[in-house]
Image (cartoon, rainbow, N blue to C red):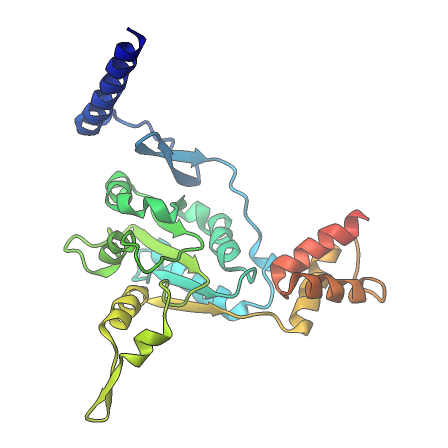
Length: 282
C-alpha cells in the first residue's frame, strides 16, 4: 500500500510540474523605486528582485583606469540623455576594476534615471522575458552580466548574441548591455582552431569556429581592456586605500604590501584594498 502511495505522489508531482509550465504566470509586482534589480529564480520561474542599497564604490576609488573610466562615463552619459550609445564589454585581468566600474555608474547617474539590472550567465536564456518587463519603462536600464564567459559546448550565449545585434526586434532604446569577462572573445580559443585558418590570395580567412566566437564579442560596440597593475600603480592604490582606512604608506607598510601581492600572485586594485583592510585592522 505504501509503494502505491509513493508512486501516486510521484505521478501527481510530475503532473503538477508539467501543468505549472503551461499555465500563465501570475503578474509580478515589481518595486521600480529601487535603483537596482537582480533576476532571481523561484523554482522554475524567474522574477525581478529589488536591491534598495546596492554595494558600490566611488569612481574616485578606482585608480589607474582613467581611460576606461572616461570612455564608459561618456558612453553612459550619452545613453541617459537619449543619444546613441554602445553596448560595452569590459575584459581583462582579474581584480582590476571591471565590475566595480560598472557598479560605480549607478550613484553617478541614478538621478538621471539610470537603473542597473544584474543577470547571471545561466539565466541569459530568459533575456527576452526580461526585456519585455522593462522596455516600456521611462528609466534607462543597463543589463549587467558579471564575469561572463562560455564553454565551447554551451549555447546559452545565443540569446545574448541575438539581443546585441541580430534580432529583428533588437534592444529597446532604454536598454544597454554591459558585460565583464576575463576573456576577450567570451568563448575559449584553441590552437587547433587557429591552425584551421587559411591564407587565400594573400588574405587571411579565419576558421568557421573562430568566426563564430569573434562574432559574439564584436557585437559589443565598446571594448575596454584592463591590464595588470605595475608595481607603481599597485602602490598608488595601496596608498589610497590605506589612507581611507586610517593608515599610510610608509617604510613599514610598503614592503608588507609588496609581499602581500607576491603571495597572491597578482597586483591589482582589489589586492591593494584587501591588503589595506588587513594592515589597518592590525
